[in-house]
Amino acid sequence: MRRALELAARGRGRTSPNPLVGCVIVAPDGSVVGEGWHPFAGGPHAEAAALAAAGEAARGATAYVTLEPCDHHGRTPPCTEALIAAGVAEVVVAHLDPDPRVSGRGVARLEAAGVRVRVGTLAAEAEALNEAYLTSRRLGRPFVLYKAATTLDGKTATTSGESRWISGEAARERVHAWRDELDAVAVGAGTVVRDDPALTTRLPGGGRTPLKVVFDGALRTPATARLFEPDPEGVPARVVVFAAEGAPAARAERLAARGAEVVTLPAPDGRPDVAAALAHLAGRQVQSLLLEGGGTLAWSFFARRAVDRVAFFLAPKLLGGPAPGPLGGPGVHALASAFALTDLSSERVGDDLLVQGRVVYPEVD
Image (cartoon, rainbow, N blue to C red):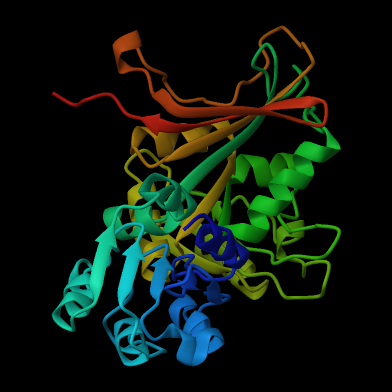
């Protein structure tokens, strides 16, 4: 199963809206006779690839699969049918698939055909690998990773607003790797006006630039913004701008002329509603979102309980003064209402310290 998880990870950033899946076929004598993984959406599923590699050796073998095999027709035939037809004797599954088209049906179909099934092997590791997919299926919205770069005293810019660069080059490369992996990247209008980010993916070997999302209630985004420009490989930018209802039509037309899709949303506080925005993105099969700022937009996501994981780069710098921090908004009034972090990890990335954790929201009375 560990090998199957390694294989599944090869599809990072290319399988959405499908999950990452790996499969290993093991003969009765313990030898590996077939391996496969899902390389991209629409491509062969992991089980089909592994069975093709195993051929007749799959008969009587055990298949180790990182996710419950599908039992429905999509762009490819059901994997349950392929496993049964190949004569596999046993299927070991890391965990069930919450997709209602699958959820237990794959296991039931295999067992009905006389195939032994075991569920739960390395389940925690497999769920961590597919955190984005599982979140989108269970909550009906994209998985959200909030990334920020701060100094050790919690500042994201100097008192004059200078923020390039708080973190080092290695940290910025890690962010580009996330952009290559996740489906969309989001910023607020303030970040666009102040920093004019390109929001492209720039990695040594190239990479895929995600959908660019701007939360801009009054449509302050200039038509000359760099985010409308093609990526380093010449691929045209894909941009969605979430505006408040009643935003100036002339500004919307200017942005549309640059290729942006302007979507108006309810905005009770003058800012586009985060829940409505995430529902829109889910409707266009956006499974994961990298939230890059700024602090006011980040608070809007936290207030909607819509941040799943945080990644903070802590730079070995001190700025002091009334400089901004990574999280704005009104803040919480009691420690009991704090957003807690669990599943913590830390690592050195260049000169910076990267701290990651899953967000645990306070209980609501």
